[in-house]
Image 1: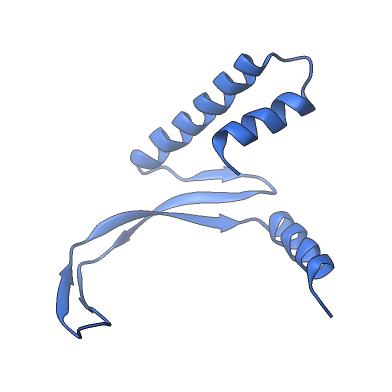
Image 2: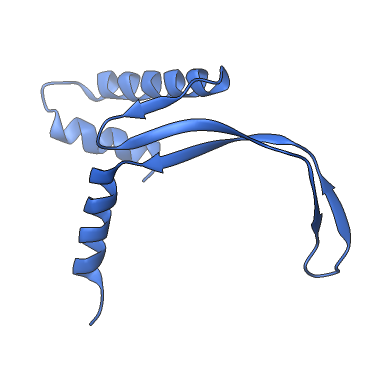
Length: 100
């Protein structure tokens, strides 16, 4: 789902709010999450999941095509851990869609 699709979906579920207000709220929320992660904070949304920052050390990797060794620098990545309710919901929808 794209940001614009999220805004449209929320606007249709919240008819009392104007689309530009929903867009402002979504943009503010995304910006706050990005700022918090950039400062190293952990974000937890109950029943949805948590976002955290993880540090990966520098390492030696190989190009699988040529076998050449490459040095990958250390980096910081965002990690998402889904909550139990989200996992259960995704699993249940996957079970309904699977071909038997």
